[in-house]
Image (cartoon, rainbow, N blue to C red; front, side, top):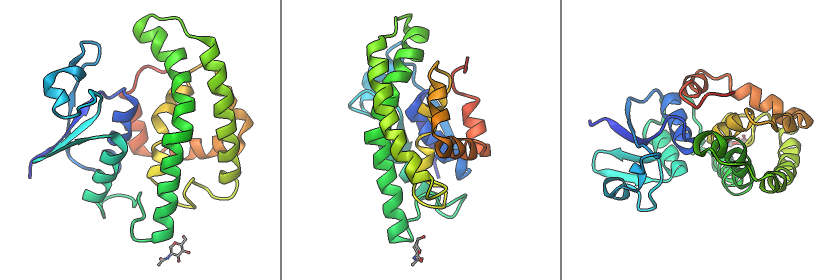
Length: 218
Ligand SMILES: *[C@@H]1O[C@H](CO)[C@@H](O)[C@H](O)[C@H]1NC(C)=O
């Protein structure tokens, strides 16, 4: 069996999503670095893996594909029975809840939190740019509305999909981790159940290991 190859960067938010899954199931894999500063993600070789020129992409034998949430599901299905059951595919209602909160992460949480992280962390540190405070403020308001929903949900169940840790929770890790290094981290203090949820699942060994490869926090 050939080794799974993940093309990406250990500090990139979507690469982190897949790395966490690989670590949770204890899979053997090779992380092949794709340098974004040199534009390697737009090279013909990488465009053959992902026509949108983004990272990550996965290569497993003859199969090559992209989109981190799809790769994450693939990894968890392939190594089913190894490590925790993060998809709950044996249970129709539980797997539906995992799907719901994965969609919420992709379509509600991510669009609000990612511009804040980009403006306040990535732009000044990686590209020497000046943050746009209007974008930050607009998205902080959006994020607070999303967190209101999360607070209500997490006051009823320990994790997003139910009383079990799942891919839906895991998927929130990278952007939230970076958000906690922005000047706006204290926003989470107003949401005690969200904060407890965050502190609970980020203590997992796989998370500590992957977090060590992410960008410096301060
Ligand atoms: C599926 O999960 C629900 C909620 O956790 C549980 O009540 C139910 O018994 C489970 N069904 C099966 C078939 O295991």
